[in-house]
Amino acid sequence: MTKERLYLFDTTLRDGAQTQGVDFSVEDKRQIALALDAFGLDYIEGGWPGANPTDTAFFAERPPLKHARFTAFGMTKRSGRSAANDPSLAMVLDSSAEAACLVGKTSDYQVRTALEISLEENIENIARSIEAVAAKKREPLLDAEHFFDGYKANPGYALDCIKAAHEAGARWLVLCDTNGGTMPEDAYRIVSEVKAKLPAAALGIHAHNDTEQAVAVSLAAVRGGARQIQGTLNGLGERCGNANLCALIPNLLLKEPYASQFETGISAASLAQITHLSRLLDEILNRAPNRYAAYVGASAFTHKGGLHSSAVMKDPKTYEHVPPESVGNKRVIPVSDQSGRSNLLSRLADAGIDVDAKDARVSRLLEDVKQREFLGYAYDGAEASFELLARRALGQVPDYFAVESFRVTVERKKNARGELVTTSEGLVDLNVAGKLLHNVGSGNGPVNALDAALRKDLGKYSDLLADLKLVDYKVRILTSGTEAVTRVMVESADGRGNRWSTVGVSENIVDASFEALTDSIIYKLYRDGAKV
Image 1 (cartoon, rainbow, N blue to C red):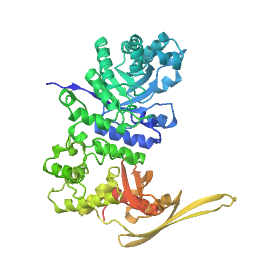
Image 2: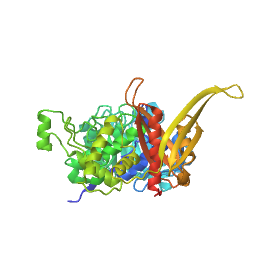
Image 3: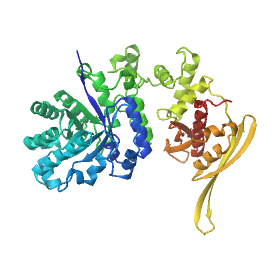
Image 4: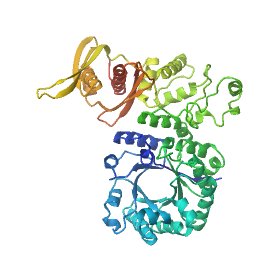
C-alpha cells in the first residue's frame, strides 16, 4: 500500500517567539533552525523579516539548511496600496526565504471589526498578495486566520477567501484555529467539507492549544484531508501555546491509522532524536524541561516501585504504549535503574565513537553519566562535553595542558574622569608540555576575563586557538539558596563555521564557567588533531 505524504511545518522561531518569557537571539534561532533541519522537517518558518531587528538580522544571514524550505511569515497587503507598494510585504518578498506564509483573515467578523474594510476588499488583498509571492518565484502559503470560527459563522465567505488564494496560486491553504477553541470533531467536519468543495486545494492545519486539544485537532484535520501540519517544539506559543510537534510527530509515525496510511520526512532514526531535540530547545531557552511531557518527558517512561515496576520489568508493554528508545527516551525504574545502555551507545555512535557494546568501560561511563546528571550536568545541549567525557573514559583525550591555579578579581572604582566603572581581571597558571605559563587577562566581567587569560598564551597550541570565540553563555541556577548549584552552558565557534557547546557545574559560578571554557578549548584541540 502506497502511503500518502504529510508535510511538517515548524513555526517555533515565529509562533514560539510569542511565548511569554521566550526571547530568541539571532544565534538561538540559527542553532534551533539547524537542529530542526537535521531532524527532517519540511518547512522552517524563521520569523517575520522587517518586523523586528532580530528577525531582520536572521533573514539577512539565513542558516544553511540542507533539507527544509526556509519560510518567511508576513501579512497580506494593506488596503489602499498595491502589493508592489507595500513596505511590509516587500520585506517578505525580498527576503532570503524560498517560501512565504501570509496571514489573511477569513472571518467576516474579523474583517469588519479588526481590519475595518469591506469583505470584497479583504478577498482582493489576499489574492493580490499571493500573486505577488508567486511572481517572486517563492512558494505561496495562505495562513487563513480565524478560519474555523469564520466558517461556522459564514461558511460562504470563509470559503471565498481561501478559494481566492488558491486561484491566485497558493500552494497551501493553512486553516487556522486562531483562538484555540475548536473541538476535534468540528475540525474534522469542517476540513472534510472544505476538501469536498475544493478538492484540488492542498490544505494545512494550524491549531492553538487553548483547550489542551491542539494535537487532537491537528490529527482530526489530517483525517479530514489536511496534508500539512504546523506546530512548534514543546508546544511553544502565545497564551496556551501551539500544537506540540514533540507529541504530534510520534503519534503520526507510531500510532494507527496514521502510521500505516501516511509518511513524513522523519525517519525512524530521526524520531529517536526527538527527546534530544526537545531538551535542546529548553537548554537554549535556559528553562527546565517539562518532565511530564508525553513521549519526551523525563517521567514519560518512569515506573515507580510496586506492581507497575515489576510488571514492566517482565513485559514493558504492560505500561508502555511505545518503546521509549523509539523516541530517544529511556525507561527508569527508581532505585534499580534499568535504562540507559542502548541510549548511551547511540549517543557514542552519533559522536563517531566506535566501541564494543560489551566493553566494561561502557558500563563505567554509563554510571558516570548518571551520577553527573544527578549532580546537575545536562549533556543534551552540550554535545562537546559529552564527547570529551566519553573519550576520556576510553583513554582517547591527551593531556594538552594542566591548570595549576586560577583567580579572578572584580573591582569597582572611579576612573580618571571620576566615573564609577567595574573592571575584571583573570589570572591563570598553566603547565603546557612541562613549561609553566602565567597568564593575565581582562574583560567585560569575570568569565570574559578568565577566558582571555586562559587563551592568552597556551604555548604551542596558541595558533590553533586563534580563531576560537565564545558566542553564547547561559547560566541556570539548579537549587535555591546562597549555596545554590549553578550550571553554565558555553557555546563556542571557530573561523570555519564549526560550533559546539560545553557545560560546567559547581556551587561557584566562576568555577562552573571555567570548567565549560576549558572543555571548549580541549574539544577544539582534539577535533583539530593537536599533537601533544
